Length: 42
Image 1 (cartoon, rainbow, N blue to C red):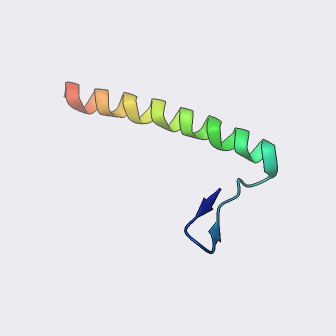
Image 2: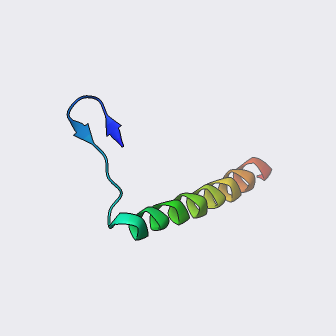
Image 3: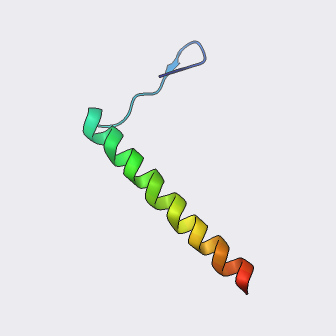
């Protein structure tokens, strides 16, 4: 994935790194949602 002219972003570790990044983003969004819900309820 290219960002700008000279910067190219590649997932770490090829396809396995890409899967790990996807899993991490899903888990992080779930955790953030739970934390926000807990803060709103207080």
